[in-house]
Length: 157
Image (cartoon, rainbow, N blue to C red):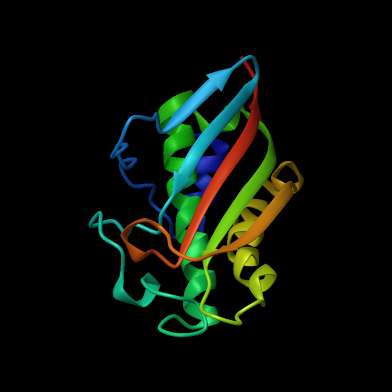
């Protein structure tokens, strides 16, 4: 078991089977030493979005539930990374996370929600998990998800 997978296990996290793309795109693309992961939704182990993670943040979805959804998105990002690389220990660093938040009208407190993703990737990867990021409020997301997270990693051969 890789060091990263052991860390996930210690956190009680089992990576799911990566979600298949639902349109004309790939779940990930590797080019040179960069791995770009397409936006991931907060699918649970059953492949569904928990009702607590569906809807607009600040309306149907609490900030805490949205933060948990962002964490779950990163778990799904790591599942895609494992599918791409075979071994998560090949990750040299997380270069960037991009977060999209299905924000209700007037809801602007998005950075703490995205911390659910940022804090988790740092918890798993340590210093290599520290990253640049964007956090953007949007009007809608696929499947009425509260959060979607994309990522870019540097990896070793």
